[in-house]
Length: 291
Image 1 (cartoon, rainbow, N blue to C red):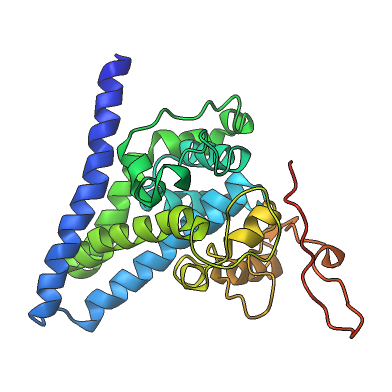
Image 2 (cartoon, rainbow, N blue to C red):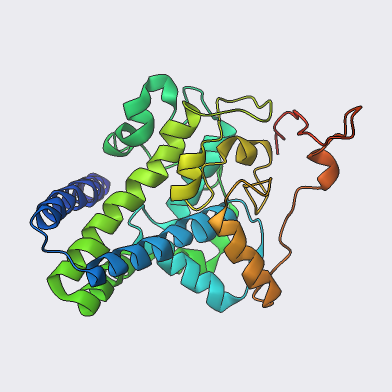
C-alpha cells in the first residue's frame, strides 16, 4: 500500500513539473505567432500573484514560521491559494522548510546546494525525497485541523486553480493562468533555494550560505531577501530596509491595519541598527538565532 502511494506521489510530482514545462513551451509558440492578448497576460499576472502570496504569506510566513495570526477566513484563503501553487500539501511544505532551517546547507538539508546548483533548484524535487517527520519538524501541524483538511484536499485546490483561469479565458486562460503560472511559481520559489544560497550579498553573519538577491526578491514577493530571513526566521518582513521591496510584507501590513491579522512579529529595531561614530545607522552582523 505504501509503495503504491509512493508511486502515485512520484507520478504526481512528475506531472506537476513536466506539464507546466510543456504548457510554457506551447505558450512561447503562441506568443511568437502573436496569438496572445492582454486578457491572457492579465490572467497570468493575477493568478501568479495570488498563488505566490499563498506560498509566501500563507505557507511560509504564516504557517511555517508563525510570524502572525490571522482571521480564520484569511487563513483558509491563504492556504487554499498556496495549495493552488502545486508545491505540495501545506503540512509537507512547512515541515520541509522547517527541516531546511534546522539543517541549512548541510548534508541533511532537503535542498542543499552542497549537492550542486541543479539539486538545490529542482533535483531535490525529482529525487522524491522522504517526507520530513512531522513529529520532529512541526509537531503542531498535526493538531491543526484546518492545515490537515487543506493538506488532504490539496488536489481539489489544484483543480480549482486550473478551473478559474479556464472560466476566465478558456483554453488560452488555462495555458497562461494555469500551466505557465505554475511553471513560473515553481521556478521562482525554487530559485530561493538555489540562487539565494549561491548568488547575492550577505548582510548578516549566519551559519549557512544564505544571500540576499534583489531579482529573486522582486519575483518572489520579497522572499529573495533570504539572508535577512535566515538571520531572523520569524520576522513577518524579509525586506528590512525601505529599498528592499517586499510585496508580501506590504500585504501583511495592509491586513494588519484592517484587523484581519495580528501579533505580527517584527525584528526589534535595536537588533538591526548600530549607529557608528558618524551617526550613520548600519546593519548589525548578528549570528542567526538557533531557535
